[in-house]
Length: 117
Image 1 (cartoon, helix red, strand yellow):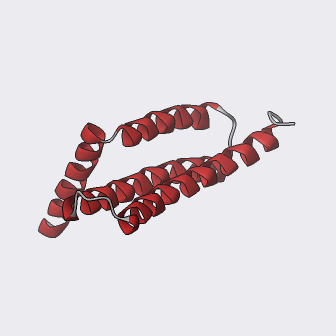
Image 2 (cartoon, helix red, strand yellow):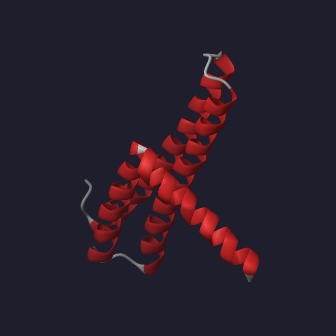
């Protein structure tokens, strides 16, 4: 249990750091809050609601991993290098693709509800 406690403490420290230092992370938190509100307000099935909420968490996880990539690249060198740029772009692409997955889920759910035509 002690290991679990420390893992939770370190993970929460990472969330706090991302909130404090990363505008993109804060933006995704706000998007997720609106998404949660709509997912709870709309007449969704349990599976639809779970999918929407889980994909929102995955976007945050992708953003946290992208932040880790950026911190690591910036720590290693402040010089511009094509591989550093590619690493950062790949991390950003991961966030983009998980956000697309969340958007697709919303489109499918809204189509089923009759909001999209």
